[in-house]
Image (cartoon, one colour):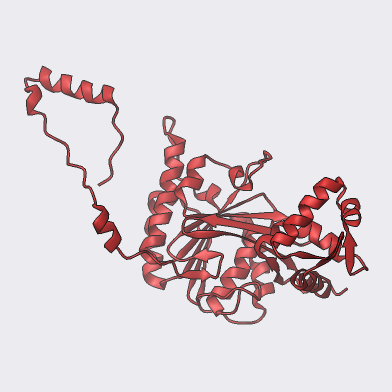
Length: 348
């Protein structure tokens, strides 16, 4: 049973009112007792195992907040993932999926034609029966949640995408606590994900303010991040490349880079710790020489020798580069292969 937090002043006021009406102070009904779970009981509970709808990216039964700046390709990425899940092929040509029905609630009306174009690119002439699109604009609570639950009962989806939160946000009255309201919106979606076992990806926009932590730039209160099970941020890199960062409950922090090829299809470039260093790694990979020195790297990066040595030490730790001889480095094969994929996809 859901309970509101009641302050001491409210309790005193309630007691005073009760006594004023002739009730004895000792006759006030006791609240429902708190239920305590013993440690021995906890050890007997089966741990919850999350099934990944998209390996390393989208866990089933969880709400993922996809919050990124405008024009970064959030919708395009989700079209690729939706097509992969509904057909069973690897997402971005790399990540294994759990195949099944997909629901996409596109409440942002101006995006329909752009969405249709993105879908044609990824699907070609292929008929996909397990993908279902809804373009109706409706508030999340109560109507949106009710209709999503009905749709889940009808289609049994493994993935639900809601695009975007701005257009379906539950209305706020003048005196509404917007932090609690946003938290409630997130929890309704999170509970729906848990009930259905589906991965729910909620697309939203980041604020324009620059943040040291990209996850802190969600355009809303911190309750949004707290109310979700995971967070995804898409960032623009050079050309058509994008960096995606993911974190969440029961989910290891993960990052990957993808790009768009000459055929306008998205493909995987690199992932893991090296993804966070990709912009600098690619600068080195473009060099004609197979090996490079600290000075070479520093000149490319525009940083001091000390900063460069720190960067190269990090690359060694994450398996992106190795010191072949004193003061001279080479990139690992995985990095060189990633750079080659971009050149090949661009027709270079």
